[in-house]
Length: 504
Image (tube, rainbow, N blue to C red; front, side):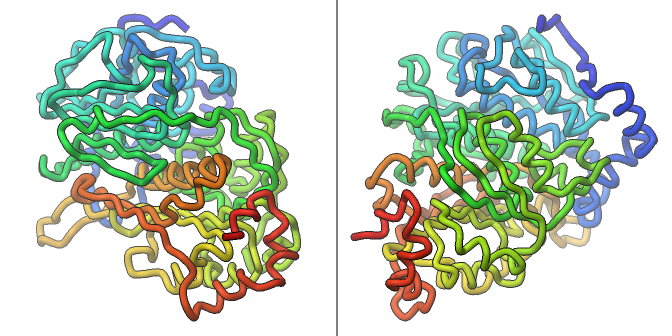
């Protein structure tokens, strides 16, 4: 697709679909009022940040690069879920990497257009070839730069931010010396997870600036090594990037994905950036509603109209993508016993309804991965290798206050009465999903994964001040850990392809 000097985005929705949208939401404000209901109950008028002009600049020298395209798609998709005026500066359009071609999109601009309009059919979205920023309402747009920008260096102001990814490392930069890159200029792609994490954190910085967080709480310069769980926030953090081989294919084997809401569907969105194989069993009880649109990059306005089951929508998204999918609809308690009998390689457990995480160890599961967002600005990932690591019972016996709903929200400002106001934070679920995908990719890299951190979390409320990355072993006296070390475990969880990790 050719990008003209300033191209208004034409909705990819069919005429019939546009009529359905118009019939449901007669005005843009009626759509936003319903979509952002969970936010407006706490915030009220969203114009102060939702109407702030945003510019996402894609590196013209790397627009064809797979890592850069993964980041650009993630950033644009997430930003379109809260910002209503977004301009993509794409000086040189490029064919989509083959694995990223779907739904008829052949060029990067095609898929950017489709996903932004599918997230918000009323948004003011444009694609331009010029890097000249356009002021709106007397204010300069918020700018995010995506990619390495080594061939076409840009002068970042203190108001700008840049994201990139290389190998297993997600990168962010405010200002200052960029440092050497062992990234795409030397041929090293990033994992889909690292690219997704960088994109989510870039979207977080745009949001922080839009809602008026003080400069000290914006995202810092950082290099987040997702393999080792190490965070460097020094001015020269980008110079510390090391090279490690990157998996190019994701084989699910036989995997249970229990919970395909915000984190689960975002996990699928990021995993689909890779060639896939194997089989997935999806479990969820809920249908999609419009308020889900501002928490995940996968659900669209058509989902909000049709209100399909989440399992059905995710299964449809994976059609033709190399994965065999089985969908189960209903609560965990109705399916847990039968699922425990099946020889899965891994459970991705994102459901904690009725205290499900406390029951999981007693189902004698294989390796369990879980992801969380908090009712603040936090997100995290947990891995549980039976016999060698702790279990979900002792890790999460009862959700702490910050992990109780509503999740993926956070305080964004102080109201006139000095009470904090809250809003949905669409980037948190995707950041958590990126950590879960990282953990799954690590499992496929061999026994070295066993020694890596299995409890990783961060909080973006004040930027990215620290990363908590711990390795937790079995808890003394925990009945769940004991059950997973029993002889009986071998006849259940011990049948999967990662079972040998449980042997010291």
